Image (tube, one colour):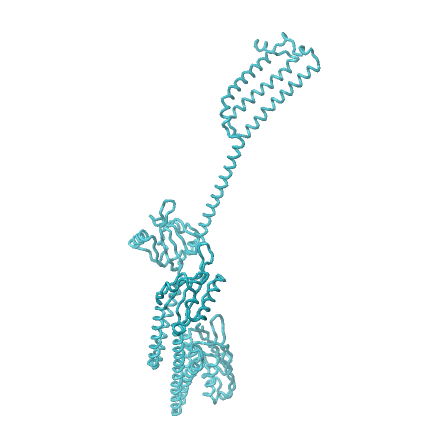
Length: 638
């Protein structure tokens, strides 16, 4: 305690102001100078401390703290100088100066070894260059990352937007571990988890055996892929056909199986439809062959001639001479190939068409086509002819521009196919077709005449029959035969042998019926309201027989005792490809309800059978204020 007391005891000394003789100006000069120096000294550590705290990455922070301590002590010595002007605490002043000296020496000793390390630090220009290099590297890495992200997004988009289902399958366990969005849609699941972790064959309608799986794996290892058409079942129980293709791929050094499933149900349905149509066509051919057995003998000769013409046509096509050649911009031949003509190669190269063709018009014709391609740069295909050995030869000429490696037009390439044989074959086929048309019309004409003969025989027979009911049966049969004979008459008079004018056919048919029931038809008007339409022969026959039966029934039963009335036939499109045939009368109607399925009369049985079994349609009978038959069916498209 005594030592501390002595340090602060200033009675033995005189204040420092006495040295200045207490000259106010001198005293204030020293006070203000020391005070400002002290303030400056104290502000520097504050700035250094703030700088060090903000720059945590700054190296050698301890030297800044040491400098701060040294500067604070230096500032303190100036404050003590002001204090000792009035209070002579020279021991305290000396101790502070000694402490300042110790810290100064320690700071200088610590700073000296740091000088080489500080000199090794990068300069501002070096740091700027390093920053520029780092910024460039960062930009390149960002660009690379962006390209990787785009590439990954593109692959994911391709993967998920594929029109086919894609599965990634473990090559060892054969379990699915990933799939695309199309797979979820195709197999009707809501999330990937419903498909991940299962064996792909569990989605099949009939799963593979172990031997089949071993063979599939073997084929993939041997050939690099495997494919087959398989029937699948979705999670909702819907079946569909798919084409499966599996291929091993390498991802990050691991082999996995990529499996693609393509929905081919539409193709399968088309194939099944075609197969059914083929079967139906075969049945119709058999039926038609049976009906036209008498005409087969006459057709065999024509078929033989057509087969012979076809064989000649294919033989000519197989041995068609094709000439391939190239020409430069001056239309000089630079390359030539013709294995059929066996022309000497050296006689062609370097020459143009005017050098080769004897007829200048031929050369000019070919040159004009080729020059057009050179000028426009667009290929053309034309049929040209030239004279060769006194004979006009036709060629299918294809001319395309040819570019060199620099993309500049350097000439043309040509393919010339001798189609003279085609011209001759077309003429032969045209003659054969005309003969076929004449023969087909002759067949329909003969069938019509034969049916007319049968109708005439029935008419003669009806005149000899006394029984009225039997005579009506014979007349009904005669009317049916007349309706078919009339159809064949329309066919051999028509330009289109596949279809006939249905409205004209109905009008002719009803006129015959009015003539047949002349005694009753005078008081009955028969009106036809129908849309113009061409139908095939089968539909026309079935509809003609139906109209014959229903109109005949109206004439016979709807207007007894010479009552007047009206019979109406309507034929119109209902919706899409469905059509309505309506036969109505305003006669007395039927006395009791009739179920057409169990009708007793042959005519109504025939109508129901023709509508449901032949036309595949529906028939509705209404018995209010007369009789109405409403028939709906679909006309076959041509």
